[in-house]
Length: 346
Ligand SMILES: Cc1cc2nc3c(=O)[nH]c(=O)nc-3n(C[C@H](O)[C@H](O)[C@H](O)COP(=O)(O)O)c2cc1C
Image (cartoon, rainbow, N blue to C red; front, side, top):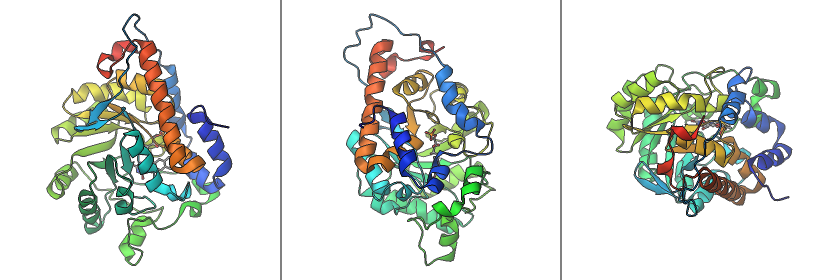
């Protein structure tokens, strides 16, 4: 049956995916309180629509870091997409390019970042910083050379978390060399492992280090407080991506949508602000856009759509979200993204 919404993709993917892979994708840390809260916090919000707003001609297009996108919904980085579908990240990147949205490739992608670049479209590179700085530097240089348009540094992963679904079903289901690393090099093999250690001693100096290596805009992914948003702005980042890693890192972290307002206020227009975690409907997107996000991103939903039907699945999921967002903007009386502000949400 043709999926009508993102929940339909998820239900179908549950039937298709290997149980160990499903545990890896759908799970979160510890009691999964933050995982559940991400979605629940969106569903608690209520809209305050405006009438007679001339909403016949809705335009969800915008720009992200200066590049045009057809809508403010993009694809968050998720590792090891080859476990979902043989098309892996290339299929996902192609679907994003076709839809005119941004695709963020994970450091831990199944395919090498150069292969993914063949998908065209607006691509950002998500960076994990390893203790091996030469390895990290080479990733940055490769991403810059391969036409990625931003470095998305994930900052919520200084150490790994305890994910009990993985422990029960065995992480070996998702082990395997990630395409960005040379299997002939011991440091690369260690980095590509599911238990790989990112640099736990990373501090704010990292922003200057990235700037010294690449002219690309820097996005910090994993900020959930005004305090860190202010520091990010002081360090000159181009964008702040509000995220708790889809509830996969520090359980009991505040829900992403609940963190958004204070971050957007602290950023004060000096950096773009994005959010991910629990976005499943165009309605979630409109709430986040009204509360100060310039864009929202989806993680698991894109992975599930890829598992269901490769590139075509991701394409369909994005078009469903687009239709839902356009419909929500029309019904809310906000035909342009500029019309949205926090007064639309209670
Ligand atoms: C299977 C899976 C793998 C992920 N891999 C990465 C990753 O490699 N890098 C990263 O920054 N975030 C990673 N994330 C987090 C996502 O980028 C995103 O923050 C999260 O999935 C958003 O929540 P959602 O799944 O509710 O949309 C991963 C998430 C999942 C579900």
